[in-house]
Length: 176
Image (tube, rainbow, N blue to C red):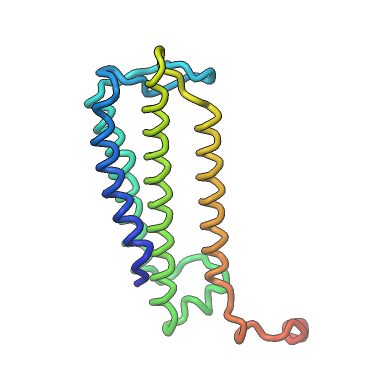
């Protein structure tokens, strides 16, 4: 199994716990947790509930999704992949499973990072009175998250291309 995605994911989980727990006390007792299109608060929650919510959403949810993907992909025998006959062959299925599980850990890492970013935006919003949420910063963060997730999907598809030696010459494919 590839270790780097798991090291990154574990480090981000630990960072997220520390960051959220350490910075939540800087928020007011009643935290603006939802904002309208103009960036002004439209819903609040207590700081204690906000802390639990952010830990559940920023640590628990990504951990649960990665655990589920790991469980499913580590046992998969049939999955829709490019060149699936090649990648699901008995001699390569362990490598295929490892790649799918690793990509699940990378996806979890992106999720944790996005929630930490959203928490930072909440902290920044509460520096002004009344709190004001920057729609440009959240849109930028969502765009970055979408681009990184899209890039991750492209890398996943590229991981399941046929190796050069097994692709054959384009003219050979036309004759078949």
